[in-house]
Image (cartoon, rainbow, N blue to C red; front, side):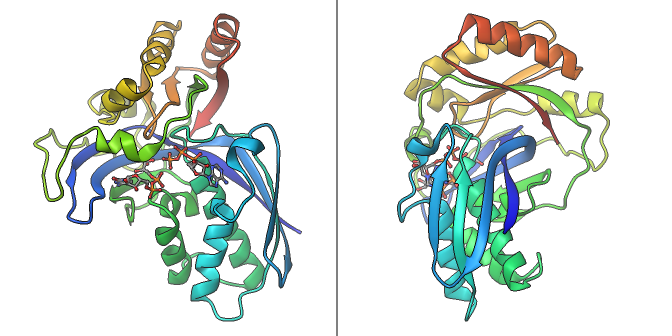
Amino acid sequence: MLVTRAPAKINLTLHILGRRDDGYHELESLVVFSGAGDTLSLSPGDALSLEVSGPTAPAAGAGDDNLVLRAARNLAERVEGLTLGAFRLEKRLPVAAGIGGGSSDAAAALRLLARGNGLTADDPRLYDAARVTGSDVPVCLASQARMMRGAGESLGPLLRLPLLPAVLVNPGVPVETRPVFARLGLQPGERVEAAAHPIVGDGAPALELLALLSRGRNDLEDPACLQAPVIVDTLAVLRAARGCKLARMSGSGATCFAIFSTPKAAARAARAIRTQHPEWWVKTAALR
Ligand SMILES: C[C@](O)(CO)[C@H](O)COP(=O)(O)OP(=O)(O)OC[C@H]1O[C@@H](n2ccc(N)nc2=O)[C@H](O)[C@@H]1O
Ligand SMILES: Nc1ncnc2c1ncn2[C@@H]1O[C@H](COP(=O)(O)OP(=O)(O)OP(=O)(O)O)[C@@H](O)[C@H]1O
């Protein structure tokens, strides 16, 4: 049996540059990953199947449209004689939450199929299968910090960044991605006049990275807050937490992250937020 982790994806920044003629939005985003996430295993075999368990399994579902199965079928279309098999997904990440749970599961499925079939990580068919499965799937293939551009298909070099102690909070409201983009109100072909994304260098020290991040933003934060006003409260709670250096929404929401100077400060904030909001999903994380 082959096993891999499917970590949460966090957009530390997400700048919208415009809308392409195909309707997708062109963006620039610094993407990092958390240590924790879902776990996916594969017992190689001829038949493709999926079983899902874990706390958020009901929301994700195990049907044909699960991104694990969609990714596997997309790879099978590109690789003749691909050995498939039985996937088991332990689903822990909140669903429709802006932290790419489904995309990370899809990328994990592609990594396991690559291992099971002796494909190398740089096989272009893996990347193609990732791209057609979803905008966030290519960046989740390596699950390491880098800039993401285009609609998500264009990836910068891997970046070595300092470990950022963080707290992730999801207020329990699923947020669908498409209507959040739609609320920007951009027409196909329209460009946005906006300040350039700060350049994040490989190996940037923590203080420099934080200074750069504070000059960045998530342009989906306002439309997501209109769609799910509880995000406004989530950000306020994180920003008020003792030791919080920066708080922002990830992806299209509703999960927000806050960065702290030390894992201890992050853990203390997480405990306080859990007490204040026992119904929220609150996780400490080391982002990199
Ligand atoms: C918001 C992000 O999570 C940031 O990383 C991604 O841009 C969205 O990634 P995703 O959920 O994998 O998105 P997809 O499943 O490919 O697309 C869902 C919907 O979001 C919109 N969409 C997505 C990506 C993009 N660059 N522009 C868009 O307008 C489209 O309406 C699309 O129909
Ligand atoms: N394995 C999966 N895990 C979670 N959701 C899945 C999965 N497969 C399919 N889905 C569906 O995909 C949709 C998006 O879920 P996901 O959790 O990936 O959203 P997200 O975190 O907002 O993603 P992103 O940050 O990439 O926009 C949901 O409507 C869900 O039903």
